[in-house]
Amino acid sequence: MNEKDIAIDIDTQELFKKAKDEEVETTWDRQKLMKKPCGFGEKGVCCKICAMGPCRISPVAGRGAQKGICGATADVIVARNFARMVAGGAAAHSDHGRDIAHTLYMASKDGNYKVRDEEKLLRIAKEWDVETEDRDIYDIAHEVAEISLNEFGKPFGKLKFLDRAPEERNKTWEENDIKPRAIDREIATIMHSTHMGCTADAESLINMSMRTSLSDGWGGSMIGTELSDILFGTPIPRETEANLGVLEEGKVNIVLHGHEPTLSEMIVLASEDPELKKLAEEVGADGINLAGMCCTANEVTMRHGIKIAGNFHQQELAVLTGAVEAVIVDVQCIMPSLASLSDCYHTKFITTSPKARITGADHMEFDEEKAYESAKTIVREAIENFKNRENEKIFIPKGKSHATVGYSLESIGDQLTRVSNSYIESNSKFKPLGDCILSGVLRGAVGVVGCNNSKVKHDYGHVELMKELIANDVIVVTTGCAAQAAAKAGLMSKDAKELAGLGLKTVCELVDIPPVIHMGSCVDISRILTLVKEVSEYTGVDMDKLPVTGSAPEWMSEKAIAIGTYVVSSGINTWLGVTPPVTGGPEVVDILTNKMEDMVGAKFFIEEDPIKAAKQMIDKIEEKRNELGI
Ligand code: MSK
Image 1 (spheres, rainbow, N blue to C red):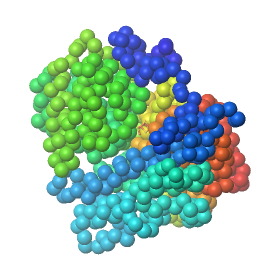
Image 2: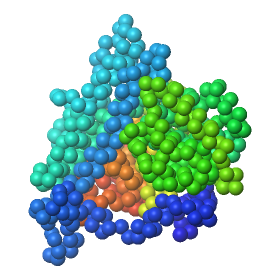
Image 3: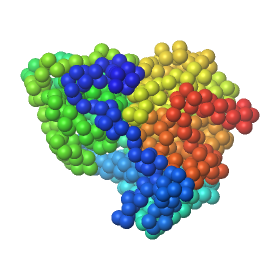
Image 4: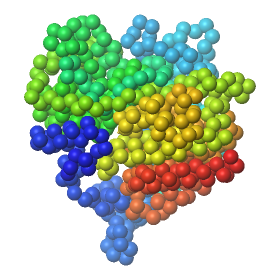
């Protein structure tokens, strides 16, 4: 495998080559060893739900097993597997949201965690009928946290944030019986219904998947985003840099990797502690350099401007630089290979969450009750490791790009109102955006999100897709590892407007934004949902009528399947660049790529070629524009 075959950026290529020279294994080597994927697994027709099997359905009609031992058809097996992926993804994101709610519940005036955005807290309190008059802000915070926690397991009613969605959307959900009740309940219901001997009907299983995914998008993830903003501040535009070139040879380099800001926010604070700065000097370093990886990178860059070391497929490469004292992780998207890889260098691989312990890692459990002290202990461990560097192994690539990040819904609204006060009479800060879409200055908008996947050349899917869209006056909003791909490729720099079509370029100049807008981490796709809902309300049409689409060109995790399903269920057509394991079930394929449109006004599209996908999205956007008569 040649380094040019695996990635589009030079930093990644150079470190891949270093791995080869040093005979160190990376994800690309393991993928090669895996050879061709299992055909049954790839098509989703392998069933391990009971112990009579594993059963697998022959792809050739009339030859081999056409049903599982219990009689489950290929479609039932595929749909059950799909539903369990949605449940897994929703559980991960929503449990993140739950942890943030617990953190808000423990916030206090004198504690480690404080309320940083009182305005947002009061707004949500009002939305949820929480009394705010003459009350201490922390009493209000605790009540909002408690209500959030009840959203996970309340016995009656529907999720509160569903009321944010347009009325028409709520009606569609009601008609299809996919309005989620409580978050944990929906996940448990899928696990129950996919147990041996329960639901054996593909359409019901996809229906349940839609309801569960919505409990993530308009539930757990939305709680995660909103409560994180209350605790750590609502993001505003900031300048940053991205790619492995942000590591600094003379400094103690600490890579923060994972998802939940509860840990990373404390590490940021601890790294500024005078005692630890002095310790860094004493060990001979020029200071402490924090850099983010995956979604933690998004969280800390949009609130502090901390630089982005890379996305999912670069986590091993950070260690390979030989210049990282510690990779500190919490939950999700952490390659277990970091444990053995770190043994080849001086890097300490530090796990902190009881939910993600990894054999071979140094486990230093993060104690939220003593968060600051706990974070200091972890940072101290990294600093003391500086002396163990092996200088002959150090190589930091030079590549890094400038990016403007941190566009929360609120900051997009503020940015838009800077150029036009016409919003006052309409009472919508999103009127300028809606007007640009209605007039055709912007043809539409696409959310590009998701991971890296070794089936796709690293970042190629994200970057090519985004370039093609912006060149055609389609504004791109992005989160997760897709956002980091954009940042590294320079598409989040304001200079990238030169790559945009004339309409988008003019908007970028007037509003002072890049053509690709950073909206945060994976849970922050809830920000994208709310943005689409705002434009929907301003234009007076439901979300499925708008010229907007979603896309995950390099997705790999169950979370991405949950996200794709709630985005489609919210009325937004979604393109997947990696084929999900459903092709063994023709009825399931038909529901996902066809019938869902009749139910919720949107469906999935599968297209592995990002340029073709962009063209299909642009055609769909134009079709929506024609239907709206704009
Ligand atoms: S981190 S879920 S690899 S986007 Fe959110 Fe990146 Fe995908 Fe993890």
